Length: 374
Ligand SMILES: *Cc1c(COP(=O)(O)O)cnc(C)c1O
Image 1: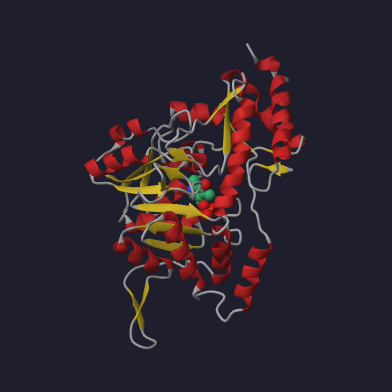
Image 2 (image 1 turned 60 degrees about the horizontal axis):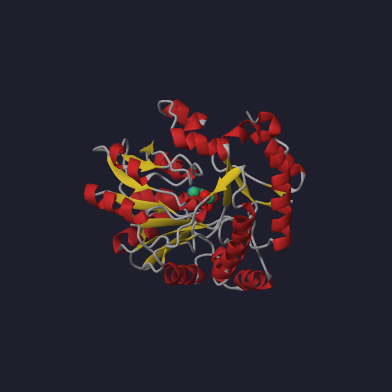
């Protein structure tokens, strides 16, 4: 099966993890700091705090934003539900903003959703395509809101020549197995230029315990165990060195797809203007509405042929958890993107031959779906 995404682990990675396993500290050692420094150098921020997942990092980011019960964040429904679930963890309410045809949040629809309770705006760089960060940043500035960018797909993406994450107050990255790089299957981090946020995030990551004299310590608030181990960090350090190579490879696959699919009657793809660069975490295609009714069959037929496509995402407000907590809602473009989107395989372990196989089979499967065309 050629999956829509997958990890790459080579001998250097394995050797790095073995070395970490053999060292005195397999957690709480120096490798986590080393990884954080490498992340800062890569993204260009002053601080990074590595954690055991991006979900933990989002939770900590919302705590750093002082989100309290009944406060609101504005975010996209087309995301992995952790983005808004972490807001629920602190008692806050996610307000969902509609998206554009590329599945990124519609920056022009954000301002009308701002209320006196709004504390933060949380866009997601869908598939690795950066959101319109400068426009969103100016909205945040005007209304005195925090900009928390869920960049879980977008480590290595760029906007106007700058790495994604650098323009937000806090940006979140995921190192889950199939994200742009991995740290032993699970992991995440937040990056920031604020010393205050950095210090608070570090505290909350580890029970909010502050060291005093000798063995004595104290805690002033509730913290968590969201620490990353040195084993995970060792893989992160090794993987980060290869990220640009991974992205180059994914870009090669994506460019091949772009060329092959140009002008086809079945779907459109994300447009990437010259001032942005994608990490190509996903290669989403958006089916023509005449094919929406056949999407389940298309999905199943592609899986039968060994092509592990996936759908990103069921709008978060459609989950029963959200329907039961909030009023039922429907955002027009989010619904349409959900009906049309399929992520086809695009990762650094694929060859161009694999991409050709995907393209030929995709076209063949779509061609045979005539019955639902009107
Ligand atoms: C993967 C992902 C998360 C959660 O990341 P974990 O590291 O699995 O907790 C959050 N938001 C988005 C957009 C994601 O893709």
